Image (cartoon, rainbow, N blue to C red; front, side, top):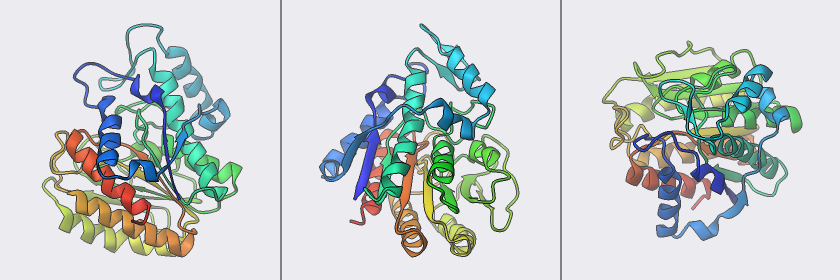
Length: 306
């Protein structure tokens, strides 16, 4: 019972011919799922458009309105040095956030147990009032806020293993006690800011360049797992960035597919104990396309408990 959410609009957003956050990321994952024989075993859903009300639970209302107003009719509008919008970017971003919302409804409604959102643009760098780092809306934050406010979930965990720290997610939930954030990332590396660990609320695990699976597993097991067990999340989100893979060109960690399988199965076990197995994963980074496809396959297979 694993949902797979995406939309053709997410293929139309592009930020330049050589930009690493490219439409081929989605197709690389889908091609790998077909090759692995998993694609037809998933339950497929089209991502809806997130509403203004849903977005404004996670983002400042003025920011949402300004980003919508900034959407160009032609060409590109640059939001920062890494992030721009073309005429298709706003629908893509609304679908990406909408996928997380729909996944929450499916999982909390009992139609599915787990979900993977193959969407772009990614989201975890988008702060309450700022787009940055390829991200427009914070997809996982929009989904988590929907779980809190619409479904009344009282304890939500967000686990982020992208190679870059999810500063946007941290910014949005900095003072929200119902949400625990667990993040591993290369440091120092963009965005060069991460708050300290706060027991019962935020667990940041900075890793030095060159660290691999042994260091990642040891650090996560010693820090994330005890805190998550005490928190007892009723729903777990995963900000699934696969750019800590050793083949990825944008960073310097050395994870491999087996590390992504390991962390996913460990998260699933925690969800089984405390949240009826409910896990929602949303795509973040991952820019070496073959490695992205392979890593997503083992991650999704673990979500499917295969």
